[in-house]
Length: 121
Image (tube, rainbow, N blue to C red; front, side):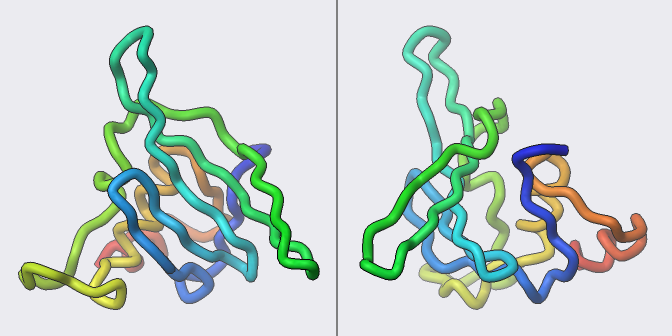
């Protein structure tokens, strides 16, 4: 599938920042973010995937990779492994995040279904 992220190992994905409207993460040494986009025509929120390329002079370019899908909010991609009121980034269930990327068509993989199930645990 074009304009998707290729994930070959869960250890290659790291969430770096979460804001109320976006999730920033790296995968295979590239930077990406998911962004909530509200459509005023139909009143729905769509989640869109972007790649952020940073140049050596500090400037960067943002390019959309996939049009938004109607999957609610970026918060639907996050599940915490703790009940703390203020969880840290390290307490995010990365397997769940990756499985949502697969399910919503933002990522592709060449692994067996059993490996994806292990990522969810």
